[in-house]
Image (cartoon, rainbow, N blue to C red):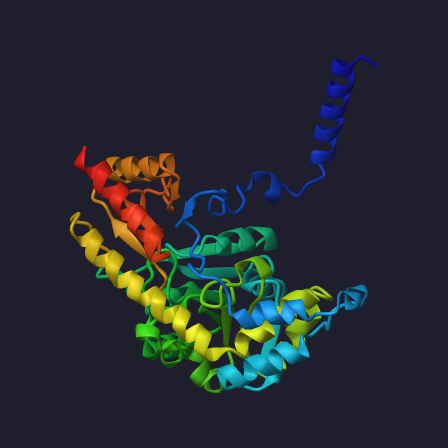
Length: 373
């Protein structure tokens, strides 16, 4: 057949195959990650500005490649033991995942199905919506209280959701919810509360454990806490997350996770990172130091933002025109930040990741130039 006819037939066959997709999949937009572009200043996806612990490189270098012919430990025993020592829980409280997104998927698989509801303060991490759609459940957005990204406890309880998701520090606002309010919400909910602590190590001036729900986890059996290695541990490319819950819940959650969901090299890297506490503290310290420098500089432009307890901030520029100008201008100069242009609740704001001193200064100089025109 001529090439054009073959192409038409292939296209027709593809359309016929698509009709077997679930209607929800055909209709959904899907999660949109931040742009991944090489050879640029990358301040758009909240990765750590510096590399991981040197212990990670040493551990990977000494790993025997011959061991890769075997499946990895399906429950990551050594990794969980290292995490238990750091976070003050038992290994039985921990499930490891292929990033905290994988841990979220486990939660959705285990707890909800139609016609259940899932709730979250809004705006927040948009992957929650994607996972709700995939699981066929209703996602209910509850606005943060307008007085300043404050937790709408009673409104969340009123939803009657089987699972309530709460990122603290929140993405994209970088704001933290006080532990006392989290505990109040946990007590009032008739359902599971998932506390997503992806950025908690940057909170409370680097004393993230003091803000973490992990210290009172055993007092709230309906609470699940999530952690990621993509931020403060600088292992975004390795894909590793941890889920903390009562051991009885972990037993059931292990039934629904993928069989070998964390590869052997990632388990090795994560274990090495956990065992280098001083390096983690130094990464957090440098990030917070740069965060303060960036905040002081952005204030000179008249921009405002909620107090940041994360490795990024959400800057209010004042107008859609200004936000668009700065975003496009930075991108043209090879500097990426995050702009939610299609979101009326966020389209005057820019989310800026804290980078190295050189990256931050390049971004600030470019913003100054753009605003001076």
